[in-house]
Figure 1 (cartoon, rainbow, N blue to C red):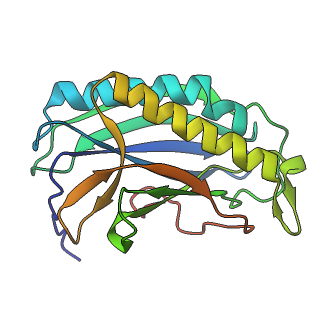
Figure 2: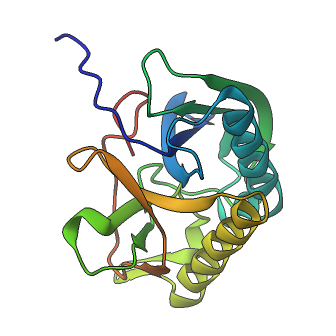
Length: 198
């Protein structure tokens, strides 16, 4: 199937690539950032990747099972093709206890300023430690910590002149995140391989 480029103005996509060591599985977690210019340049992409890396080291790693190692952070502009991009190799281990099911994926919901479907984004997080997973869902306190982590990412991006964002390929634009919530369900993400979203 040929690659179809769908431009999204003022948007940088960041992919966190992680390796689950027990069974050599690889997963991806995707974030978006809104930029002040319609066509983000290489410097903006690099800065957003650097902000994301600091967030992964300082916030996200403490909310992910130690079975996962985030080994790469890759960012690219979604406005032009071929896109300016930047990648950094990392070795950031999660700090929580092991988990039996690597496909556990707490779901964070990102809301734009309007209650429109095109302004609702989903972010599936790498699996947490086993003690945060129950038959009824993920622990509420853990999910609240994830929401706080995403809010801190939004603040860090704003300090650099950017915003955590929801992208809409249908509309060809991204909107800034106005609020962050979570799904209480026991969500599992099976399409997490690189190149398949997530």
